[in-house]
Image 1 (cartoon, helix red, strand yellow):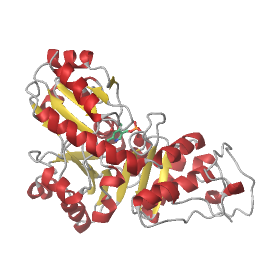
Image 2 (tube, rainbow, N blue to C red):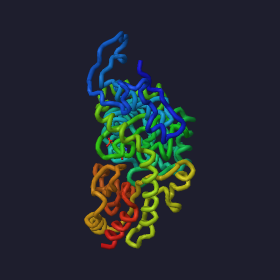
Image 3 (cartoon, protein in one colour):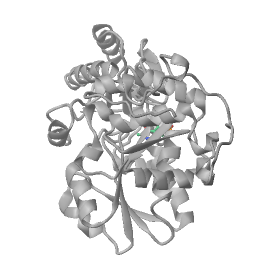
Image 4 (cartoon, rainbow, N blue to C red):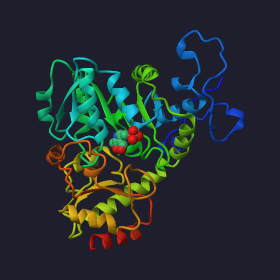
Length: 387
Ligand code: PLP
């Protein structure tokens, strides 16, 4: 009987060794790709015991899920086909017709569209809350509120709220609390340790870290993750074994990559905030940032994600045309620095009016600061900003 119970003391060791099959399958040091849709029947008594890829129970899933649970301080994890599969299944598993969700005012565009366009068809409504203003949350509650949904660092404004207070607020009122921890990563922040119920990730980003797969993850108590998995048996968002293999390979370097992303991100934020061409920088690692006090209290680092305003559409256009090292592309969290205009990509689904009300204007540039040499990167940004 293969077990997946390995775990060690530190995250840097666990990203490499936690969940390793024991005994190792055919002695393999690296978990092989189990590219088989189905498995021999044994004495299965229930549907869940059948081994089949849609049930997320191949050896490729089981070792990765065990590792993911350990690094987010969870009892159980579920790997999914995308971040949106993790998010949609986590929401729909716990709220339904007639229920209401409190959501952070700015969220990743896909998640916001899910609440705006799809949730109403399932009879689910929402109201946005200001995560930095705890005194306003209770007023947004309704008798039918069942969930609070936030991001540890928001996309694309890098907002950080009073996350410990949000988890406590939800717990006191018996609401399910869900947090998207994609931008912070478990290296910098582990939401379950401050009282959140469910963590979701777009593993497409930092967890895999190589811009070569789309995947997601859900972590939480065994009971809650199983509830989500049961829904996903029907919605069909399981991950392919080859994606699991690449995900597990990328995950092994998460701790070293985040050290560098944190360092490069902080230095880039300081550089941009001192640059005369830049109007304002959003980065929770800056002492002047509204989320800094909570980031300083709760986070071990503030990652490589930041955004900044250049004052005009034309200046933003000129900057994107002038940088040489960064790639002008969507997504984030890979080794290469990426630059993008959220108003023209992740938040294109929202109306201009809604975007501008939130501060997602056409001159806002989002940067995923990569792993390149910092001096060379800053030199390139300086040249492009002066163009
Ligand atoms: N959550 C955040 C914070 C994101 O930035 C994204 C994608 O950009 C997602 C979720 C969705 O992830 P995926 O594209 O893997 O479905």
